[in-house]
Image (cartoon, rainbow, N blue to C red; front, side):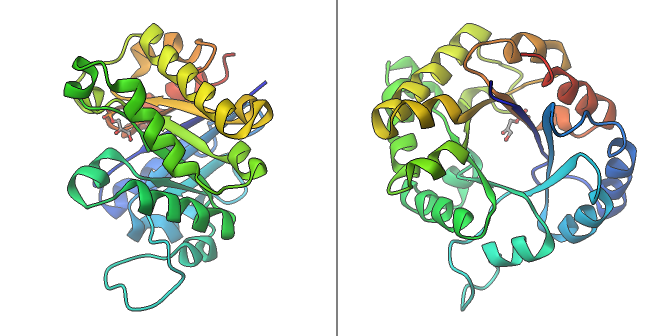
Length: 253
Ligand SMILES: O=C(CO)COP(=O)(O)O
């Protein structure tokens, strides 16, 4: 049985005091890590402090992006080694906002996924189609291309440890959630792609999250679907109470 991963992607929100207050409020209350992986994905400047605050608790800390090189002349970038050195556990890669606004490509996402494994970071790789692509009946093929590109040249053992976040772009921050059935169908289709690509063992093991307007009111139904193994949540992860009810829902199977 796959353990669910509930990750709150704060995006570019909160000041330092609000971030530390949040972690203080939730760190003792999240379910045990054996039941569900609870992750706060915070802006870079807060990572060292939040990692220290969460140390020894069931709450893990993730980053929202990184570069694929280890060091060098890449002004403004943060390396995988730096994240690992801070004690960061997860890293979100290829979020649609980075693909749209910051020139992230399938190729850089693949390089970053390899770099994550090299430094023992758990990659959360985001994929998802636009409204227009869905209307044109291209959603599955677009997502298939993104998944195959992201996983290119990974070993089957590594594929098992990837987390894929299926986030239809039209559902992000819009209040429009995919129906639980549609979200599950795409997650099942992603699992099929992984099966063809890497075989049945990795396909059974890989965790596939849904993201896009997940909130306490819809999380139970989404998390009870057979092929959805967690959630990547933006807006509804910003308040402690809401975050805690989301991670509680991850305990369901
Ligand atoms: O992009 C998302 C998480 O990465 C989803 O954001 P919302 O939950 O705010 O729709």
